[in-house]
Image (cartoon, rainbow, N blue to C red; front, side):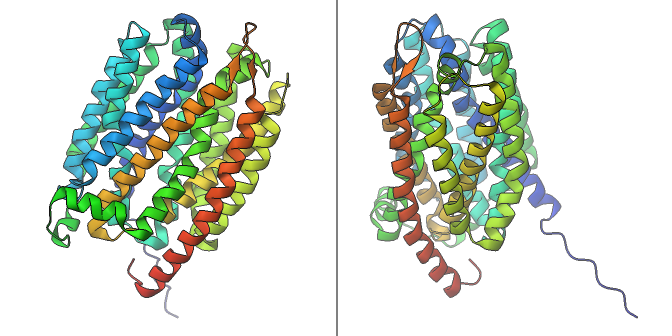
Length: 415
């Protein structure tokens, strides 16, 4: 009786490295953005700023990242993606150093702008590399691992950042990001192979014409519009998360790290599972399920008063499962929209759209939420309803994008 042939591994050793290094780079980018949430309570007091000003700090990164994405989109498909990734990642680390030495509100604002100019493009280049190197059938799994960087930021980055901030000041978490980023950047430079297959299939034309054609192509424009509503939720709720938890929910500052760690562990564990399910059951199916779950949790969470820590942890954990489901499935789905020759430009414009929409959302959030003299935030419930509304609209738009991807996938089996 003949023995069964062992199954080939789903990913080669090099592909595993690519997933790992892109996840680590994404981890530093995500942490740089997310760390502002726990640092918000320090910045409001130390820099003597209002919630609206803090919203501008968050928005400064988003707007500069959005502008940078648009400016680089026309050139994104003209270079080896590895070289492009290295250039922008080095710029991101430089901006983070400026955040680490910022002595004032104005300096920090300028530092966030510089960080956004470079950091906002890193994610789009990473997603273009994923679309180039991995077939559609496994992109859900790949996105599941890459998006674990958000959970890793929760488990390791935010608690460590919070501890550093309480002991050594709010500048110290930025130094932590720089230290890790230098190591990851060196690994990428040494081990990552050139990613230039798109250079052999692209149509040669002016960069600005390439940008214009990308923006005005109907199916791409629909994806950019959907991204606007996808971006709204995170940018609205996250900036004031720590202040709401401490002043409204009654969480002690020393207990904040447990909230980040436990919810992060849940998201970290569920990321690969969600990615696998999105490949098996359908990316849009998982997106809808995640939206329903996240919407229910947002409605509950934003209406809470003083609440026991364990209940807040449970609610946050379930909320993050919903959010992670939306992120993984939508990211995998959107990578299938552009043609290979347009992927760099599409991902750059999409990231730009996300950042600009997020910038507007964070400013709107800063105007809706008001901090009273006691420290409590008012109108956070109103913010929750706005977020839920954006989720509903995004779900409708993703339905039509999913139909387009299904038609494209059946036409081109080698997507």
